[in-house]
Length: 295
Image (cartoon, helix red, strand yellow):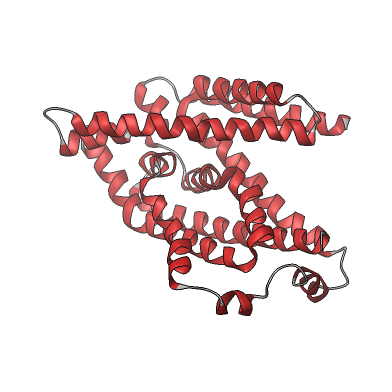
């Protein structure tokens, strides 16, 4: 247990260290603090967007979904992959270009106001209110996840876990601004990538073969062919429609505003989509091994 606490402590120190680094290198003006001076690399852009997008859902939600719902979850994953690709292809280049040319807009409400509503600012106000309301709930869910992690993994008080999570996140965000958030998300994206490869790979070693693991899983959940035969058009479209959310998620598309060049969006797309496909496969495999373990 002491090694677990040590690793957690190292992780938090690393996050705070990134905040200090970003504070020293990218907070000399408002543009740097809000968007990293639009000098964020495609690697950091891609992984920070992915980690910010998926976060706890990739590690817990998607494996849990296939654990409960079986292969029906694959259509949600497919919709997310298509939606993310379309977001990179259709939204990212124009958003990066126009937010800079519209008098260097630093936020989405600022961009909407300058481009579509210069006179009365109604669009700016509405978009800001929507973001504040719904991202308060989104952020709260993240803090709840941190509290649950401390409670289940470290046998600590739930409220203490929430407070520690909040203090660390607020600290590095206030110190280093957007660059700190992007770099910490990049690190978390790397950790997620490694974890979602290692967990199912190690789990497979406890079975005689992948086929035996799958046979154990199918004792609990329907096979893919059975799920496909029961699939309705409404449920298929509902699952695929998850990908539509990418076009309106500020914490994702703001990464496109900060990339160092429009030309590098293609590179970011390749990195981001590769990361996403591998981690989604790993998450689905984790869910299947979980089903086999608890058959």
